[in-house]
Image 1 (cartoon, rainbow, N blue to C red):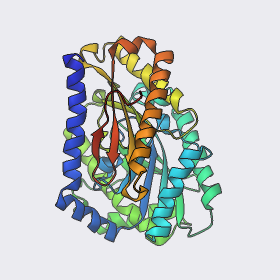
Image 2 (tube, one colour; image 1 turned 180 degrees about the horizontal axis):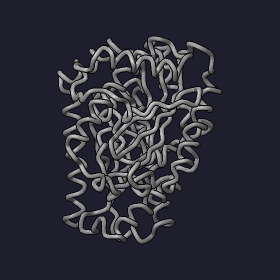
Image 3 (cartoon, rainbow, N blue to C red; image 1 turned 135 degrees about the vertical axis):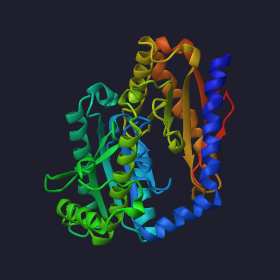
Length: 370
């Protein structure tokens, strides 16, 4: 392994370790518990592999509250057995085990300033990405129902990456672009006026007239947090050019919540039968970054593969996750070798299991596929 490749792997491992320490800090754990007590609705966010899309950051919500599921272009298929299993377990955990309501966000993303800062996973086709997000919402409604005051509610959410703004799409065709909400400058969630909060409630009620009041109430801090976050983006004067694709890591599997890093990693979850093709697409994006000089082979190009382990999966659950890593790694390497062979000379591999309770990454031996 050359020095630049080792440097890339060390960066990823250090990032996992730093994020695990922060996540397990007693104050962070207490903050999550406090937030859950005030706003108990479980929130699942289905989104693109693009590392810029950190919804917790966009909404100033404590890490661990909004549960991310990531795949190229935000493409998911509720007919795919593994994705069914993940969604079934997540909804059962919320509704059956914890007695919570559950909101599922189907998302798409774009840049208002340049289409080529948008969703590379969808070929920069925002309308196509939006249609896929609406179609996924329809799938969830078919499965979990669409009656009033239902405990599982699917919402389509647009993510504008220049200002990191949320766009809520209502069941009646209306939309609420938080970046266009007129409110006095506010960079503190606790300082927003009572009148502004009332206006937010009215907007959400008009978008989701059939939503439970408790669920709608739990959306309010997301909107308020996004208002404050947008104000900070505008005040900072950060140029959108910083958001152009410069990723040099391809990630396959689950457990990458610690890697919400702009321009670093492209993440593919095994959430449809076409997931190996999604790995190829991610490899094509990285190869394009290399070809166009946005990254250098001197920085090292990494294939990172992981599975997510939860304590309740039992005594042999960890070993099952290791087998999943072996499978994911074999298929991801095959897809890249056949589909993007020009990456092979530059590619290194890091594989492991992530503990969901601590977000700690446990590397597996380099010869795990043998």
